[in-house]
Length: 125
Image (cartoon, rainbow, N blue to C red):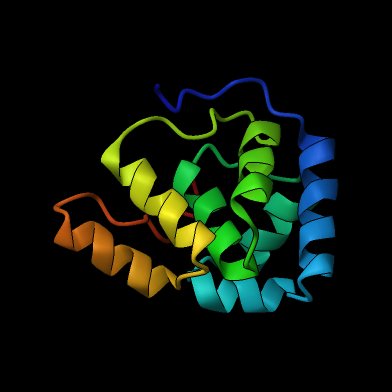
């Protein structure tokens, strides 16, 4: 299954991500620090000013916030992305989300498997 973008539901995505940040008591500054994505860009995505087509950004946000796999699937869907495919990389990402692993641990496992790590900081796209 490919990760081709569907039509995003920006308003619902923004509300959902606000709910997740509130539920897990994580501020945008903390998400920025953990993910390496600038606070300004995180704010723009969360407020709907910008839309990201980066699957990895949603995964980075989910790991930084501590979202469940089900919550991550909702965020991906609301952002217009297919949820998860059947690739080994997706299995590793789902496992990392389920086990509340850090981004560093997730990238280490991806690297050990010879798979692309989560992408950081292509913010101006």
